Image (tube, rainbow, N blue to C red; front, side):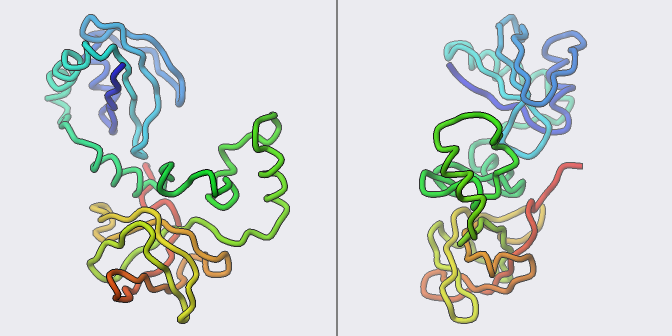
Length: 220
């Protein structure tokens, strides 16, 4: 299978242009099979960009046909191809945590600020640990930060405040929306409030930054 992501405020118009008919509205996280370019496509109202959009799943040998059909149908709507770096910048601006970078098996949804997507009324592996953690003092939290200087830290760079090591970075990049370098990282909870001044050690230099409220960008 192959997956293409059709994302952005014009994604509905592009999808309808490609299907050649008016589509019944697909709600967030709903999935439907729709013929596109004479290909049965699994259309999912999901994405990792912070914008309205769809993820399209097709047999691998049909991906090129769907790719060219999308570009043709979307030309009048300003559709442009982009790759994983673009998507990674968009998900970072939206404050989305990426597994392997910002979340892993050593972090709980409590620390990562993801309890809103966990249903504690259901039974699942790891539930007891999460419930226990919700009743405890949280040692560190995932936060967003903006840098004052034009420099992009690497994942794992040390975060300081008041000459004390308080955490480390997880994801960093330049934000075209904010016109600043931004990032995510874990810091001790007492330093996690927006407005907190911090320093990040980048190549043996301490770069000034501050904690800001997430997300960096929110779709209107």
